[in-house]
Image (tube, rainbow, N blue to C red; front, side, top):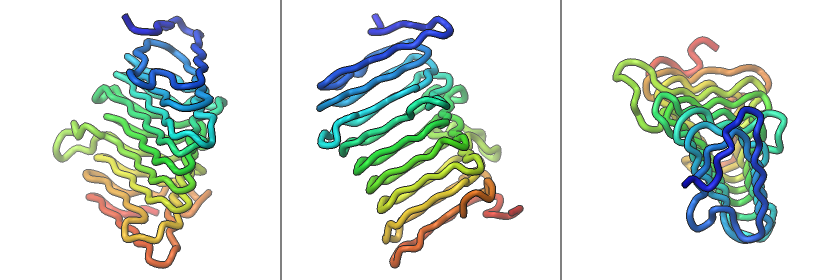
Length: 239
């Protein structure tokens, strides 16, 4: 059986532990809304059968290395607006992935935050960041991937990455990589990483687009930093 099935509209599941939640073997779930807090060692690992709303996902210990890993089998994986977002206070990583081909979307409507750990956000279809969907890390690398499975039709743009005006992806010293088969619409990308791979943005079958005026689209001003942009149908072509 799946460990937790609570699929009624309006239902919510709350998990709390000291030494991990599905840390050795991911909890298999079919649920609508999830809050999960781990206070010590161990990972939080969730394998959801369809879409799920993440209200609060927290690794509370500032000294532990546990991460947060959530994969949805199909449907929308959503970091819920008005919730507490997803946060790792220690050195662990954050990995959110919406599987499911053209039905696999990731929507970030609240903050996703790490300290030293990397942040990986991906979807087989589209990745969307709302105005409050900021992503930040002190020193971890941040990677965002739309159309991860590469299932788009050749010559036709597939899954995209869309950052609303006001959305910000920021790593103090880590690299930032954003890629999709379709268009990549940028809110703001900021890093002080001083390497040749500080920022990379790729639209394999579309354009790189200005998403608004709240932030400069790319800020990478450290000495030694380099930005790489690659697209098929334009880079800032309209604005």
